[in-house]
Amino acid sequence: MNAAEQFQAAATEKAGDLRHRAVIQKAIGTYDAAVAKGKTRFSDWQNARSHAAQIKWETINHLDRYLEQFERKVIENGGQVCWAETAEDARRYILALAQRRGVKRVVKSKSMTTEEIHLNEAFEHAGIEPIETDLGEYICQLRREPPYHIVTPVMHLTKADIAQTFAMPATTSAEEMTMFARAKLRQAFLTADMGVTGANFAVADTGMIAITENEGNARLSFSLPKIHVAIVGIEKLIPRLGDLALLWPLLSTSGTGQPLTAYNSLIGGPRQSGEPDGTTEFHVILLDNGRTKLLADAEQRDALHCIRCGACLNACPVYKNIGGHTYATTYQGPIGSVITPHLRDAKEWSHLPFASSLCGACTDVCPVRIDLHHHLLHNRRNAVQRGFDHPLQRLAFRLWLWAMKSPTLYRLGGKLLRFTPMTPWTKTRDFPEPPAQSFKDWWEENERRP
Image 1 (tube, one colour):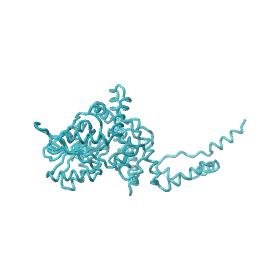
Image 2 (spheres, one colour; image 1 turned 180 degrees about the horizontal axis):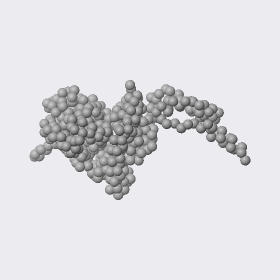
Image 3 (spheres, one colour; image 1 turned 135 degrees about the vertical axis):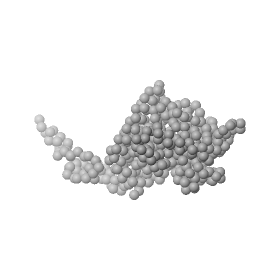
Image 4 (cartoon, helix red, strand yellow; image 1 turned 120 degrees about the horizontal axis):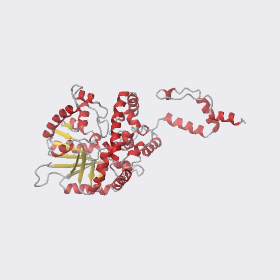
């Protein structure tokens, strides 16, 4: 099956799985309540969104300048910068570095960018052990599953499911399971040769990366091993350190409802002379992997404003019913359906923008005001213009257009449809019984009455 057929099959299965839908909607309902409370801490939430959108607009529309400034500052701070045009370029750089340094074990903090370039698989193929240290990502790794959600990787699992993953009794408490994972991961931190992280933001005027988290595992990942590698999508740049005063709380509130996540770290380079601890090497990989192609599209480049809060996933009625794994992409939900056809093969993933009701809820909750549901329409238009839609669908719309231009054909079509079986449609949907008489016929009859 191709990607579209796999999506259709998985969506049909998950939409009919009432247990799965109940678990997801309960989790998202909890987030929604927390986020609603979190927004009240802002004196003007809508103004905060507008200000954040302006910061990202400034960055993306002057990205060349800010990237060069960031690179210069990183080097001044003693770090090294790799420009990776593709995922393969990024993997090649990291593996070559690991092999030169004799790396055998790598600890990784939560990073969707490393998921995007399939870094774990590359490490394993090279005989290097990667260990995910975020609790949710660690569970995903044990289950050999990709993250289910941008922010909450195991949103689809119950406590009993996680206990089974850890080979523990279903009655095991969450605290006991957490301590079990903590003991395993602490040993990994102490024996790792390299730490790999992403970055929530990259600050151009200081050459620092900013990481926000709730477990402290990212802080251990970049501070205990001798080598720290940060893989950063080029869109993660922001101009100034002071911009974090807005973006950090905006991200945490939109993602989890918190005023601020538990750990917020700024990394500016390797250990400096006279400092007692820290890494000896700091490498930043600036990843393109299709982003400049999206940047070149003036109509849709604001999709690069995304700060990966996951709010659009939580608001999407489609995501709530079919879940994250159905998309089979690194980035799920509305934002994934917008950017994936740009970052990956446009034809293969042209079905994603059609997996939307276009209700606009995603746009309403986006903290940086990305016009997501209009971009989904743009992607649909692009797919049709490039001939990616099914030939039968194209024929059906041409016939519809032809009939709509003729009152006689329109009326005849209405009569025929009242007696035409709707089996392909009603196989998966409810459809009301057609009326015995059309409105036009009713009007003509009643218009003659006194």
